[in-house]
Length: 301
Image 1 (tube, rainbow, N blue to C red):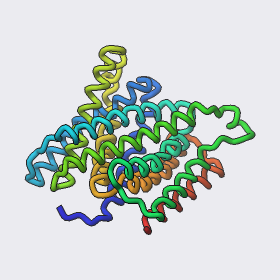
Image 2: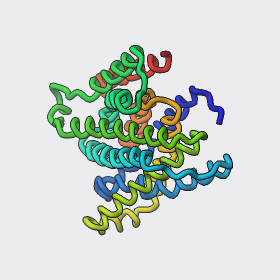
Image 3: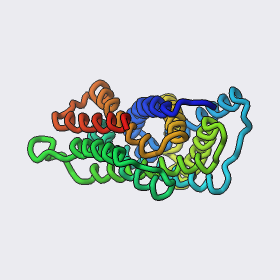
Image 4: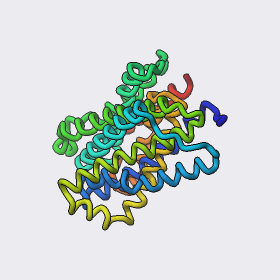
């Protein structure tokens, strides 16, 4: 399929916006379902939509379904398990810090993605790309660094910072795992390949978390099913966002995709102010400015 190499930009922006809405829904569900339950929502209710997306893509393209081999499955397993941990830690951090700041904390991931992409996938990073990543990441650090005085300082602790940073690292691992799975699958039509790995990853995640809840917390699993109405929207947005993430990973390095994904912080600020009534501090605005500069640099390399 003939796609412009710059389509990854559109795919990434669409994915980032959709992911912001999904995260907002999961944050709301955390209060009633807990961290593990809210984490499972995106996978359990996202899988049916991902299967529909794959079926539509196969129908329109006329391509046959190609099941992942052991190597592709291994990469996808690594990505799926990393994403479970990343999502759980992100939701835990959101219970202690604002929506937009937690989103920013998880965006430290381009550093991890860049390093892992070079080591494991052979991705090439120019000096300009490295500078763009560092500038954008410095904006994340400015946003997340605690105040030394005032009311916010009293509420600050190292726990949500660490939860957010580790979550970002795991999201980076997930990006590398999924990109590796798509590359090893080596499907001629990258759209079909991306959709295939998405469904594979979600099947793994649903099996892992459903088994865990059946063994450890059946009541929570029942609560998830009872909350199907809000969960359905979160699942759809999760599958929709993931589909576009995977399309971007199929045609561009994980480092560049996840650095551009920092625009999610801008979307998160809109949601944070309008839905959760959380204002933006001046220093956080400076951090966003640095992130935007980093993204502009990235797109002009």
